[in-house]
Image (cartoon, rainbow, N blue to C red; front, top):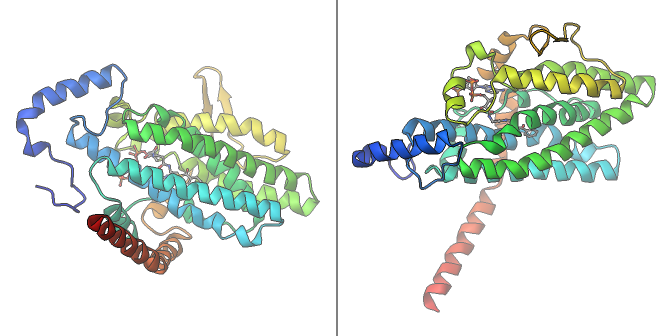
Length: 330
Ligand code: BYC
């Protein structure tokens, strides 16, 4: 049996084989009706495991994703920009917390998930291993990274697992504000001096391919897609969402007066699909293997932040113990 804090806590179907047949039938019925599985429902072990994997990777991405922009809060060009950026980064912390809570309903503790991240054993989105080198990059992150996130996450509001889908509704509302703030930063730079416009263009050039790779490997190399689609976890394939995103930014970049660094983008009338140039999947695999431009820096920073927060955790635990003792006496 799984122990209290093992990553597999909650994967307990093997303990109740008598429930398997009826449980599977009820699960299949809920999925076929495109309805929702709730934490107390019977679910296949593999479904639970897939959700823990995806939701925890998503939560870790939000937490690590605070770093590239958080680094710019003190250097934002005005008080207004600073306040907006601070709110955005705080939203991301909130998204991480909703998502860890959703994962916890599957029977794994946040401490275990956090340990996996700190040990370098957990994945988080490839995009956050790229640097935010200047203020224009902050704009490109908001426009392209949050834009890709919305494209990927709006369908997740209809994911079959209730707590994940409900968390995503709020996350998506906040992401659309995030995308607009990034777009607006770029718009202002694009309408500024020649040098500012060039900065905006350079930022778009740098973040375009990494943003497209956020949707995951091509469908032909996506290990989990077909199973996740059949469980109504994923509603669209990686390539379908990538194409949808390209279609979206192709129009928006015109408003910015900038260009996308890809001359092969075109809408194929026959297939009804967006076509774009080759992406460098070797680069993607390098980043996933921990060898991207900022992987080591991001993890080192997270470990340091965790260490520096020890006193907060200790104080909170001491307060909770004191309160519990008082309640016992009363
Ligand atoms: N980066 O079979 P596949 C945000 C891994 S947060 C790293 O297609 P799946 C934001 C994948 O995990 C953005 N790894 O997988 C935050 C798998 O490895 P494992 C995060 C990736 O799960 C702050 C392997 O490659 N969004 O937007 O069916 C500020 C095979 O892939 C990536 C989410 O997490 C990647 N890009 O599909 C601003 C959304 N892509 O686990 C913005 C929820 C793939 O077998 N997640 N891998 O070792 C998803 O929708 C899906 O998990 C994915 C991948 C589409 C990402």
